[in-house]
Length: 335
Image 1 (spheres, helix red, strand yellow):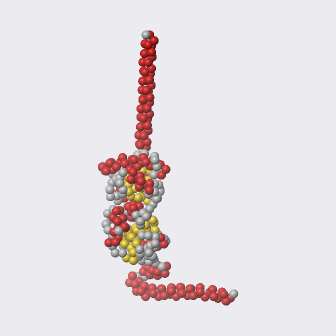
Image 2 (cartoon, helix red, strand yellow):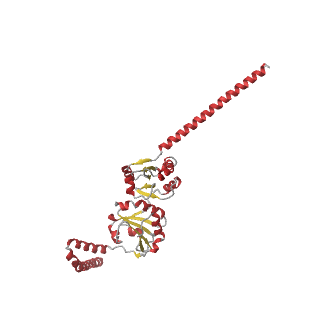
Image 3 (cartoon, one colour):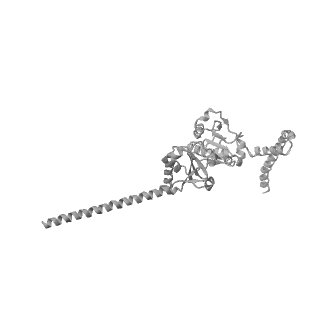
């Protein structure tokens, strides 16, 4: 009887010890979960997008660093609703794709927002190669992440006086494809606010149409060739014809639609051929005469004198050509 009581007591003691051990395991696991949650919370705090000042934004653009910036304003309800999605974007590029070295910021300076000419808030720029790209897709984290990951380099093509015709071949049939060119003064505000949208147009037309930019002050020869009446100007070059975009600038979709099909509603004109060196020379002479002579006499002198100058230049050119043809023959006789 006493042995059975002893066994019973022993069983009770063992069950109590097992219960205590189980409680300790549960407490330790709960503590571990709490630690993990705290670590996650601290990680979320660390990657929350930082607000930029106006000067910081400008410096970042000029630095060449890659970054995403969200333009917001105080009291913007949609900005507040979008905030969790944007924080998810920041977390993704701080953890899963930290190798891309892309920073995520917020810009709330109203002066900067006005300068960018943004039509809605929130609005996103992805800046790389010192070139802002306006995002116009769905405002959810996954769409934004995909967009950033596939647009790592500048898409539009800068063109100059030296390479415009060689690369585009717009007056010889354009074997390099169709070209949609923005002519503007890159430093002027009317152009600078348009460039992020133009880069988005280049993204949307990628592999369909070549999208380019000509900086007018740096490339006067090309600007003069196409007789630009104003700036910015958008010209579509297709199969030896050019079509000028004259519609109201509503959004990038309007411009994309023009480049794809809308141009058919506009009259196309033949592309002017590139000036020859001789054409450029005679034109420069005429311009210089206009600057030197009084306006009352310049027109008469140009009408009379320019043909004479042209004839003299032709004679000099032909004489040199004949001399170069004769000299080799004389050399042979001497030998």
